[in-house]
Amino acid sequence: MRGCLESRELVIDVPGRSGGAALTLAVAPGQVWGVLGPNGAGKTTLLHTLAGLRAPRSGEIRLDGRSLTAWRRRDVARRLGLVFQENHDGFPATVRETALIGRHPWLSPWQMEGGEDLRLAEAALARLGVGHLADRLVGTLSGGERQRVAIATVLAQAPGVWLADEPTNHLDLRHQTAVMALLAEQARAGSAVMMCLHDLNLAARWCDHLLLLYPDGEACWGPRDAMLVPAALERLYGQRLATAWVEGAPVFVPAG
Ligand SMILES: Nc1ncnc2c1ncn2[C@@H]1O[C@H](COP(=O)(O)OP(=O)(O)OP(=O)(O)O)[C@@H](O)[C@H]1O
Image 1 (tube, protein in one colour):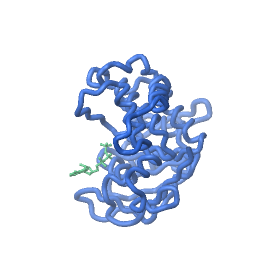
Image 2 (tube, rainbow, N blue to C red; image 1 turned 180 degrees about the vertical axis):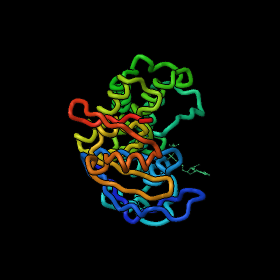
Image 3 (spheres, rainbow, N blue to C red; image 1 turned 120 degrees about the vertical axis):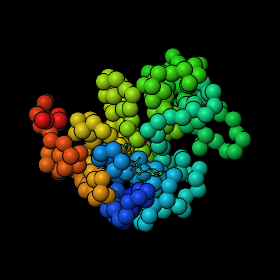
Image 4 (spheres, rainbow, N blue to C red; image 1 turned 90 degrees about the vertical axis):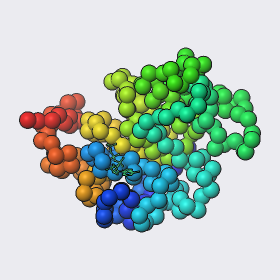
């Protein structure tokens, strides 16, 4: 499914911060954007603003060529999926029931999920390697299993735009790689993908565009190689870095 998300002169509303960069950028079909920045820089605020969950201070967001506020909420949910940083399970649902929530934007009010919805939800769980947990209550899962169910739920939703807040949260190395490969695969199929990451090396390997959010609200963005400048990254995190090259890609590690 193709999707495109644009921001025009967008200033996010970070509590206690005056000003902030005006973001004008487009996450085009096929692109994978990484959002980097230290704790509190506003990465989650940005993703939630782009998803329409909180109002910007100023500026506009356009989803598939139309103002986000002009779409009905259901139509937004058919086009845009959000992987939250943490999952809070208010109800005792099974893994299968949780993945089926991804199909709800595609049902009419009061319509029950059908066989095709069930097939898509179970295929998504299998893709994330959690199909065998379908009958378990989500509250009994490990952190990494729960995270993979959350990603499977968005996969079942089949959005053209993916917003993922630290999608590799709680995941071991193999599953981090599998999830990044899945997001890249979604982009290759025409989706627009944007994710917050704390791991510079995952960003360097898997993202083609980067947005650097500084704690004072400043920002810069562009193609990955133009953004992966050690001095800029050191200023971003307030941390000296050493750079090595492994299999043709830069690897950043904290120095001294
Ligand atoms: N509801 C709120 N009330 C007060 N302050 C808030 C609220 N939501 C966010 N903030 C503040 O806004 C700033 C940006 O938060 P945000 O969660 O977007 O940062 P982040 O870059 O995602 O951080 P992290 O890397 O720690 O996840 C933080 O200083 C946070 O404390």
